[in-house]
Length: 309
Image 1 (tube, helix red, strand yellow):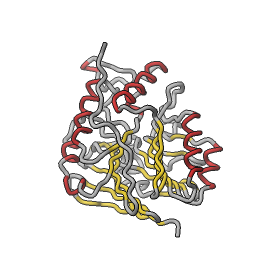
Image 2: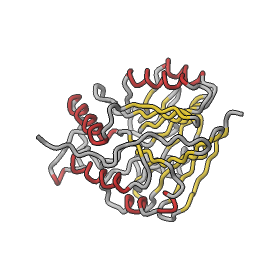
Image 3: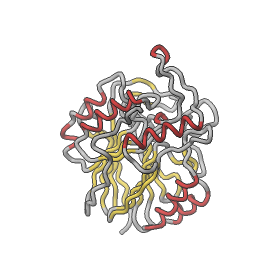
């Protein structure tokens, strides 16, 4: 029987800070990659000194979510200076594994439903998580984690009906506190993203059902949807947080790999030399989103959203 590789340390709950909670997000790191991104990130001690927690926003594996790929993720997790949690992206389950060395990473066949389910179970086993979705409610807000679950459909950026029901219930628990939703793919409300991700009509977003949209729009406090997947460089015109519906904010997190879109005409990401991340500085009545350049070890973007009294 093949032994299951497991992350050490395992994911943790968020710390219950009362006045300020600082969370780093890393998306689309695709370990192992062909650059120094992981090392540059982990060695950036001034960055880590101000943080309480880390969220891995999916696509941590390079391509197919093989045991070998998870070995590189395990090394990264072991070196993290903070407690963390993780959600899956599409690369953790969506593609059929192409093991042949000359073709590895060059074959992008959609996996079978059973193969997708195996990939998601491998993700859960690696991190020791009981489910793809979970939530934690603190004084500073509600924090919801939603992993992609498109096993029975062609669209990778899919949440199950059970997940949407779960999100709807969590958003109703504390409607007067801000909610922070971590999902690998952006949120589609009633309009598409103002960009082209694929060369066809696919949206690259999870598409909220009407019942959830009603709940989102009916809250007294804002919802911040934190996502990666579309590989936006901090220079991209959609990088600043923006409302996709009243009180519902889309916050794109950069890929941490150096493979991004930074111009409107970039349908596919382009190689560059940057290593970026985005963090949240959560306070009772406001949140600050900080983009960080790990090569220069400096903050390069700051956006503040104030709410409540």
